[in-house]
Image 1 (tube, rainbow, N blue to C red):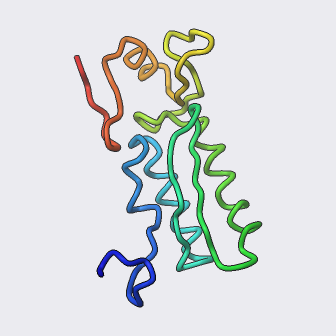
Image 2 (image 1 turned 90 degrees about the vertical axis):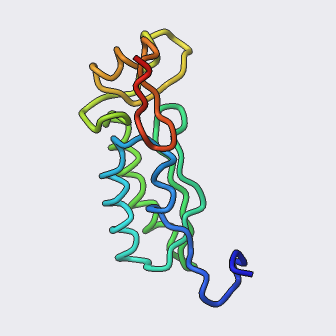
Length: 132
């Protein structure tokens, strides 16, 4: 039973294993976050990693009593993602397609916002796909 999480040599899933869940523009900040968490809690376990409402969401589990430290590491990365284009990593902000109120939200820079609004680019499995 190689997939049994209770197996003695089972390794916890960590950020690098799920980095493809978001766009390549956030890769650097997630790699940095992984190193910070791993330095404090080498055996941490990633519960979820996703983009939601234009922002980054990272949920991890560490040893008992690690919650405050984990939150202090994750919160700045999530805040940085709101100012970083998920497509290319340039400075950006959370916007909607064509800046339409109530639309789909994503952290984008000006250039990527234009292409995303025109439906020319999208993120698939952590890779920017150009539809044009």
